[in-house]
Amino acid sequence: PDITFIAADGTETGFEAPDGVSLMAAATGFGVAGILADCGGSASCGTCHVIVDPAWADRLPAPEPVERMVLETTAVPAGPTSRLACQVHLTPALQGLVVHLPERQV
Ligand code: FES
Figure (cartoon, protein in one colour):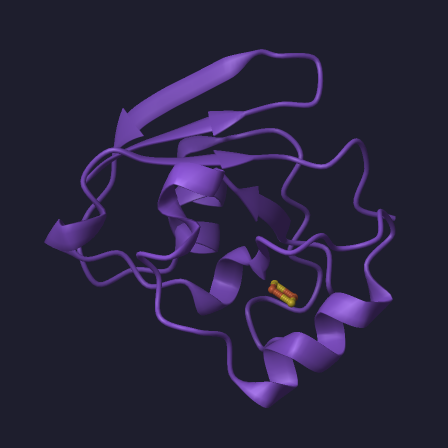
């Protein structure tokens, strides 16, 4: 799907990502700044924090308990639409997804 990351300073990065990969893998693969993903995608570091655009928040599957726990440890406190990008898997249904990046990940 086509996805767009909006940095804290408003810079937008949009690109086409393959289905089946995580939002984190898509972002790091494309070179989006601001996703550290220190743990490599195992839902433990909290440095792939993204804030899903409110228009999209209800269209993602709900986070698993482990994701919710790690979201309590992010550098910028998580908001109601925050997710770990490594736990969001891209599907055709997410065509047009927009997510925002926090000011920092550590
Ligand atoms: Fe570490 Fe997502 S990459 S929690």
